[in-house]
Length: 104
Image 1: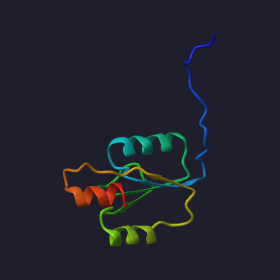
Image 2: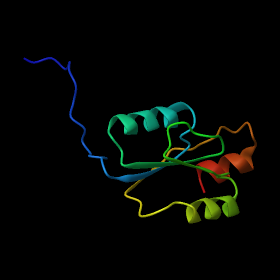
Image 3: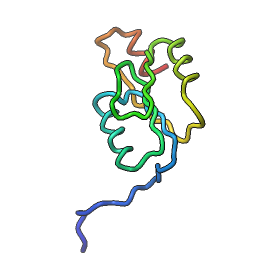
Image 4: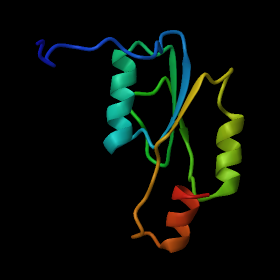
């Protein structure tokens, strides 16, 4: 019986794909951005409240503010092939902010 070692081929080809990632500046989102880079993503747009190092295009956005979201969406160039809705916050900034970012 074979072991589980080694590498697995990517299930999705992201080369030449335009990907949008929310919450890509830190944590899991940052790790996802690095993985997308390793998978030769065509163009990576990161939307976050903090600057993101791994983006082709970084668009600042406050996901608790509908107007900020609308403005960010207007600034995403070209078609979008894939969206990773990764952003999230704890309840520390307050319940309203937590619900606006994580649920709405």
